[in-house]
Image (cartoon, rainbow, N blue to C red):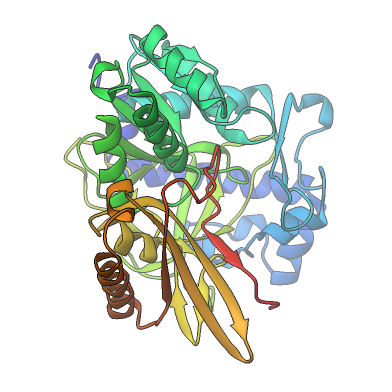
Length: 436
């Protein structure tokens, strides 16, 4: 590795120095947003808060939250703080649950984003010598282009392969000697399965590290990806409303949390029910305020991601706070007969079970007034062709393990290999047939 840091001075600042920068940027942000964005000004006036009331970082709690519905109500450009002639790019969510959420970037925003993605990739040990195989989707989704320009900023060579056409991707990996894979973890497993079908040994590829994000994934899935692709797998975090990929990133020195780039993104953990800011070390909903974005800054955005902040200095030397791997979202949390269930909890059980493949779906139904949950999970070819009694024993074991962990009884259905639809982007883990 050429260097451990991309911006060493900023990444290793003592907390007092970092907080001084955060406060200065926060005060500037609040004043600018209050002046230029009517919806923010109206919400702040309703809360009885003026920009001059922000005298310390703790005063952030006085400001109202921003939620996804605010973005939809002001669709498409109502929350932008600059005229459209200064906006050089827009991205948008898929809009599967309503109007798309639209975000914009000035030229300076794109420079900032590229620098942060270069910082993130450096955390994973990526250098200008690497050949980066970018399987994130290009287009309105922020992942592909966000990662692409960060890799170029770092000076690495980028292969903008995007998603899909999996066999061709593997050929490119072989011919171009790809050394870094950027993808969703579910697509990484899809690549691994296709390699196995083609008789391609990952050990004969040049891949050494994978940067995976855009969907929650468990530690057991990390082990599965590392073993099947013969690489080191690291986690990256981001969301379009805050910037895109590169908000937080794991380093190679630890798998206990991703460094949040706090000089640009001010994090909080709140009680998802009351909105109260929780003390350091608490588990709750992650909230972000952007400190440096020009076109589309956002104040106290409720991500709905459940996490915890770790303030101890990492062994890599970075003083930036770390966020634990997201355990679920407040909006993909299933309530089954009064019990809160996150798909990642089910995944933890499945990935710890021998003979089970890393492909599954949760199917939730309502029978009468009772919620039911079934888990469809693939098993290995060898196990699927085994005797019925062994399959029955495995089914009972998984059902028992899930009941022990979550206190919920569910039906487990072992299905044959390749029967669950493969993902070329985010995997659809839950099919909820209830009308709620």
